[in-house]
Amino acid sequence: MNEVAKHIANLCEKIRHHDRLYYSESQPEISDLEYDRLIGELQRLEADNPSLITPDSPTQRVSGEAIGSLDSVQHHIPMLSIDNTYSTQDLKAWGTRTKKHLQEAGNNEPIQWVLELKIDGVAASLTYDSGLLVLGATRGNGIVGDDITHNVKTIKSIPLRLGLKNPPLQIEARGEVFMTNSALVALNESQSTLGLSPFANTRNVAAGSIRLLDSKECGDRPLRFFCHGVGNTESLNIDSQIEFYTWAKN
Image (cartoon, rainbow, N blue to C red; front, side):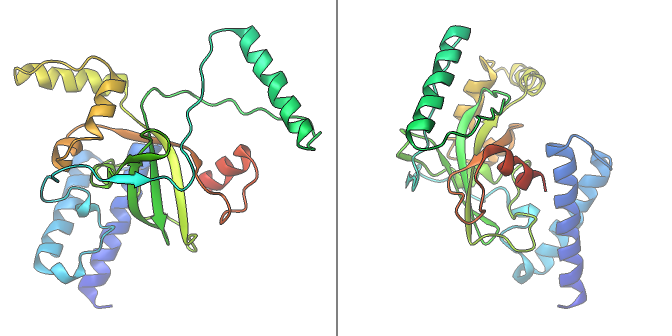
């Protein structure tokens, strides 16, 4: 690897590090100006050395042209939804049914419950081959969804490559694409300035943005991704939700 290639690789790694701190951990180490300088330097080096551009480079989040339509994607494991309830009685009844089903399946161990934050966005899956993001998809009807790879790549909290030394051959991360309330306020202020109608709520804007044909337009909207599970755990040797969170954190 020559010196230019090494410098580009170091810049990419540095930018990914700051993306993770800013978008996933809310603990930025550098100013926006310093970050923009890193991106600018990388863009100039890649423009002069196009053969050194990699699919997971931070500059490759936005594709050059809008696509004509969204392709369909078959989910290897169905993306199921869950029912909601506002009743303590219904929740207890569900817990009783769950315990019964487990006992009927031969599992008599005490149940450990995991309570998770409910984020109101739109469900999405991310498929990584050998650590590289290759597919993003909506839930759709649970069996077939839409290919939104071009748009999920623009979301800074989604890594284009997993930070693992030995990533599994394939892993499908599942979670929620969403927008914060404060981001919606700022976006609607921009809409008003441009003479455009405001967005009704964070869920609607997330659902609409992720299905846009133009990734640049999607990239202009401050979306985030919260991962809460995987579609297939065979390659990870994970048997519980707690084990998944431990693996994801590490």
